[in-house]
Length: 139
Image 1 (tube, rainbow, N blue to C red):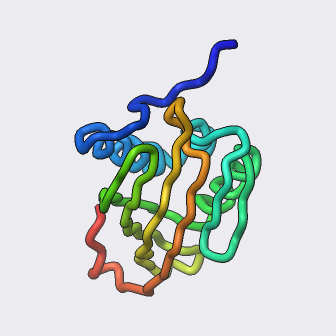
Image 2: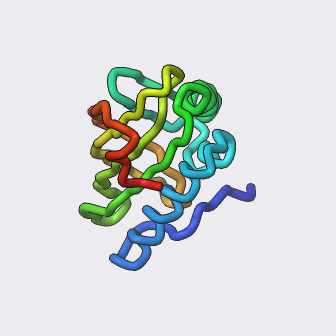
């Protein structure tokens, strides 16, 4: 059977971990839920704030709704640490809500990958801050 693979594959070294984080950032900034979901296993397990999301179909539904409500979304991710098939990542993103209020979200994610480089677990802790448009950092 031909297995999906998302390079780079674990175990990660510094170069491959940085590449994996950049690919994730690029995918999320595409705001394409299907493209993003393809980096996760079919049965991927997420915790996103207080939501528990399981599998690609739920990921697609979640991201579709997210980006309908978050205009001008822009994300920046940074690798904090890694070992074997796991990573810790910090991130921040900015968006404008339906009432034109700007927000910056800060958070940390813990990632676990399978042997084919697909993310099987994503646990995100996120906090939002209201900002003025003049305070934006991510353009």
